[in-house]
Image (cartoon, rainbow, N blue to C red; front, side, top):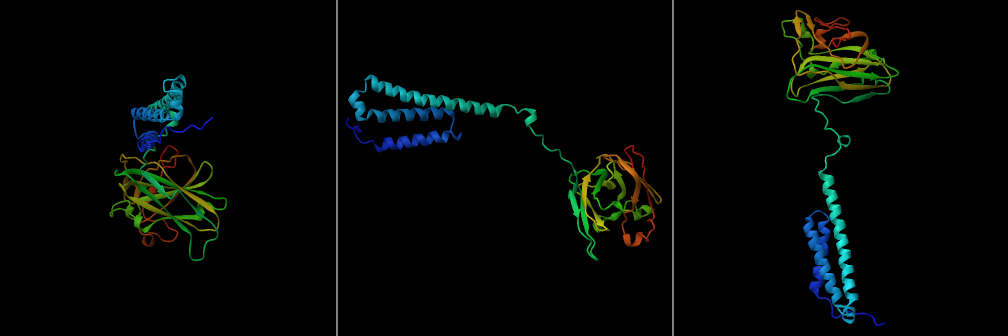
Amino acid sequence: MAEEKLLKPLSLEFIGATVIALINFALDQADIHIMLITWLSIVVCVCLVLDGVRRTEWALRVGRSSVKFISSVCVIVLIFASLSVWIQKRHSADIARNESPKSPENVKPAPAFVPLEVTPEKVMFEGEIPEHMPMTHTFRVANKSEEILYSVNFILRIKSSDLTGDDFEVHLSPGSRKPQGDLSSGAQHLADVQAFLAYDTTGLPVFCFYMNKLAGHDFREVTITRTRNGNATVAGQAGFFTTDPEPQSTKGDKVTTKFHPNEPLIGAVRPIYLVVNPDKDIETGKPVPGQILLNTAHDGRH
């Protein structure tokens, strides 16, 4: 059987049109065109393919009106039509999937904005204490909102198999030492951040800090220093706060304030007096002028 040959060489127009049509078809699959363009592209492809088949010597020999030629044309049309239907179904399924509401279990809620932040989340104390260079870490409690936050509470929780709460000292950074009361009262010596040492229900020591208010975008910094060799992890955690002012009474050298724990605290509460000027307000082993009155009952107030 003689090898079939083209009746005449394909024209450059035919080749260019075929390439362009196929590229257009590919671009459509990237959702660059609408489905109507897909159908038009397929029609162009069918016409160009049939035109190419029609020009062959085989088509001339069997006759363009013969059953063989017409059957071949029908097969080509059916192949492209099936491809079009498959593309249409896939496109419709993609649209339905994108427009259908997501089930609640698959939707992750946006994290709620919490204006009170304590950073870093945790620090490590390891190894021996260098001579004349105690190991100290600094925690910052910050108000990230525009509003004033009242009754601000935060804690530092110590996890260690070697050390207890008594093996650490907490102080305020120099820039965070602001007086709690006016200069006419004994509270002038106390900083507006106060603290006490307690224990959580698992027995871990917890330094609890509280302040009457923290202005918008303001912050305080607390340092914690290890006084004995041993390994420990100290984790910072924001606690209670409110945007509603809570009463705080200052009378003479006494200040009454509230602490709202986020969890039960056990054991004796040991107040820690944080002062504005440690060099002048504290004598060795003696408390500063001014007191903090704490309610140690577990009714939500300390």
